[in-house]
Picture 1 (cartoon, rainbow, N blue to C red):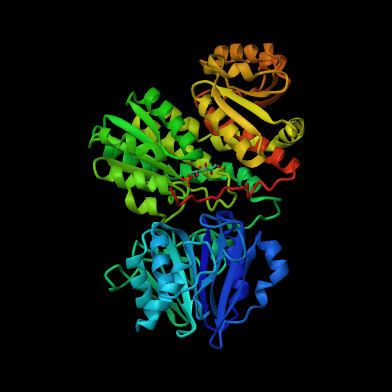
Picture 2 (tube, rainbow, N blue to C red; picture 1 turned 90 degrees about the horizontal axis):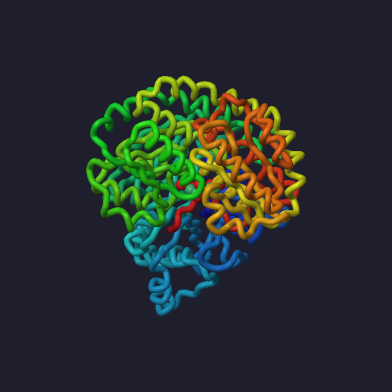
Length: 594
Ligand code: F6R
């Protein structure tokens, strides 16, 4: 939800760098963009509603003068996407500019007070209270840093914010609570940003802010202060990510690039086995229940975790949506391991549940973004190694979460055979990727559909759910994922010759039953896309179209491999429908509001 960047340079013009950096955060919000730079005692402001390229071709951000400034991409929460509601927001005199990510829950009361004191508001946003509060506190005699400190004592909610003021040139002051903000320390160039891809091109040296920390960027360097206003030193994390990882590198979209990186993402995450083993050794014998907590795609990875832990280890395992967690929180105890799955590590619902679980249970977070809030709050952390994921739809982070869960479960069960089989998964994915042209062809058949069903059983049920989620979010085709056995208890009433049904049918103990379910929908006229094993003659005969996978991938490994053709299907249908798969409407990559 929104991306922010702040930057101070020693000798250079800041606007082109701000524009480049904020463009890397477009996955966080793409309904408006704005930049504020300052020089000669004046703030220059350009902003408007629209995607970055559209707005930039009108406003030409790069020509803005100044060597320090702030930038913002917006995903609207308060007030529709419009020029007035775009960030940065200014005080009335135009001497202070602010960008903000998050929600200020008590902004209405603050706004009323400020209006009664004569402050005038130009937007419907919650953010605009901040420049006016800064103005008020600076008029009372505080400097920018002290004024920011006072503002965070007044505002409630989740935020990361950055401010500049013409009275204190060459300085950006920033802080965070609950929304992410990292600090980049380059040579004569200093940054704050919502996420590291924004600044990878300029520096790999990253520091992470804790809640209530304030960072002051100047031409001469970076100063950190903790919530008690004490100057502190921060550990520097040197990221081994390259700037190219945040570029499309010849692909049309990030989503297809990231789908094609899944073999590597899995190979790299398999390298975490030793660290995962240490966690397993620590919790083994101390837990009698596992609860997974997550949202969206990460929730689907968690469902696979339930099947794995219950079938391999026999420990009762539940899966909860993070937004529904509080209704079950009372049932936790110190023998429960609560596993939080989140690619961003910043999802507000998930973090709220993590804080509650920390009070009674052992917590483990499986996270892709280094230094993110979840990694700093959980007792144990498994870092997936997918690299930066820019496309809004989770793909390579999903399979990386899955492989981390497989490793954890197999180690917990001492299942050497499964551990060995996991080593071959990158090759199986590679085989699928080599045949992606087949899915591209098949996708043309689905471009005009309004609805679709995805069905699977056991380990394939979460594949069906995830395949349906991908199709609806990227192609805007209404899609339902169903446990195949459940179809006849209601939804089969919807099946007719206009509804395609994707049948996930890997070899394994459920194969015969899923083939019976296929017959049930076929008898109602459905168009069948079968996803099954190479050489599966029955599936080939019964389906209208098929995509076939290496038969060594049985039902247990299927979640890691069978999802790939479904991701490809949603990508190609989206492109054929002339949509933007990287930026689906109304969605943002990191959901920092509850
Ligand atoms: C779908 C998707 C979302 C996320 C969900 C949780 O493609 O990406 O459903 O999975 O918003 O996000 P994280 O994993 O960051 O907690």
